[in-house]
Image (cartoon, rainbow, N blue to C red; front, side, top):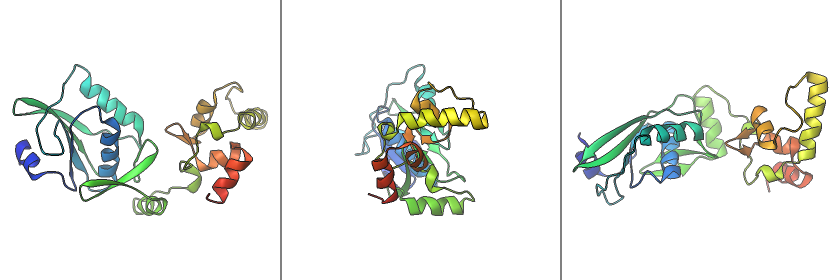
Length: 214
C-alpha cells in the first residue's frame, strides 16, 4: 500500500496523522502508545481530514526529532524516521515497533492504542504490561501523580547526602541541585519525583497525601 492509499484509508489502530512537526507532545504520546501496543506509523504533514499539507524540512529536522523522542521516552525509543513525498509535498514518516520491554513512558505517562486514539495507561495496566513483558514496575519507581520538585524538602536532601557520604561514601556534593540529586539517585522520571522520593524527601503533608492516596 503506497502513502496516498494509507492516507485515503485514514487513521487506525496502527496509523496516526499529525498536521505539523510542532505537535511534538502529541507525536510523543503516539510513540508511547504504539510502543505499548502493536506498533504503528505516524505520518506528519497530514491533517485529521486526510489532507496532504506537507511539512517544512530543514537540515537538522530529522536529527532534532529523533533526539527529542529519545530524550523524552523511557525506555528510550529509536523509531525509523523517513522523509517521503506525496503531491509534491514533504511528509515525515515515523515508524514505531512494539517494544518487548513495557510500559514505555513519554514524559510523565504511558499510553496505549485504542482504535485510532491514544489512551493513558492506568497503574494496574502498567503492572500487567510489566509482568507480561517479563519485567517489574515497582510502586516506588512510578511518577508521583500531582507532585513536583516543589514538594521536595531541600533540607532533607542535604541531610541525606551528608549521612550517605559519611556512612556509604556516596559521592554527590551537598550543594548539588535537587533535580540533579534525584536524577542521580534514580528518584525521578523526566524531571518529576517518584513516589519513593516524595516519601523520603517530601514534606509531611505531601507524604501523607501519597500514603492516603489523596
